[in-house]
Length: 251
Image 1 (cartoon, rainbow, N blue to C red):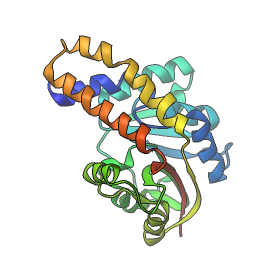
Image 2 (tube, rainbow, N blue to C red):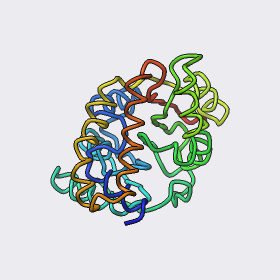
Image 3 (cartoon, one colour):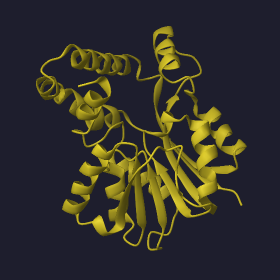
Image 4 (tube, rainbow, N blue to C red):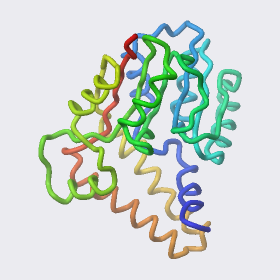
């Protein structure tokens, strides 16, 4: 298997493909102050295997949610989970790149994206997706964020190499404001969203992943890279986190 196939195999086993939690998803929804009984049209972009999608469908029982991900493998898992949860009637799936969305102008009441906007960059995401939102529509996105003005060189170098757009929350708020949004809420995901909800389950799957790959050199390299990221987080978690940004499109 090539590296791409291996990464899919590793991550599709997890409930989440990035830091997050059900309580935090619901908190973000509360901060939108949206009418939970309205027939909303929502896109969950970069939905992975559907942790946030399925919870939103449970909480917004009249909403119609389009779950968008580049990987059909993830969407296949999502569809099975949605059927088990009894929310298939409120979720449709679309295999599509997040910079090639087919939605019409001003079609959506809300765009949701947990742990995924970095794939095209925060600024490009909020700028490009804005046209799909109705006036007053809502954007909810989580984004890797520095929590201090300065930080040790090792973690600075790692994340600047991995994601040059990493910045403090005030800089992300400014990006939203510059692209026609009014920020209405923000909070930092707590440590358990990284460790209990993402990293520990990921680590628990390493052995099975290596076995499925025949303990290949490529698979071992992927595990080593994931383990390195985990170690860096555990060492430097005071300096960074995932920020949850909630903003409203200005008319």
